[in-house]
Picture 1 (cartoon, rainbow, N blue to C red):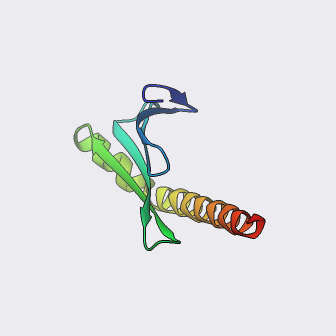
Picture 2: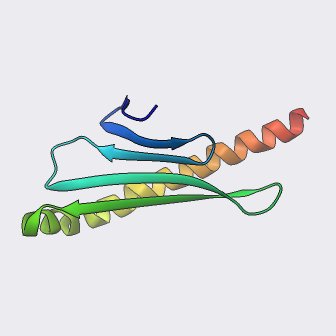
Length: 98
């Protein structure tokens, strides 16, 4: 539900089965948003798309983001692989169950 808290994130938008957009509620020198989408590829498959945006508050915000970039790259790559793996496993199990 938009407006609900999810860990340190606030849900901004939900489209059932297609989109989840979150805004970080931690103290940062800027605003972080995480968007996760499922895009159809064909009748039986879809693609997971993850986008992170950061709107820095001034030069300090830019410096913070670039200093943290290697860690962010790692964390968000692991998150994308985990989401893709879980959804692929569930899709296979669903097809096997018939």
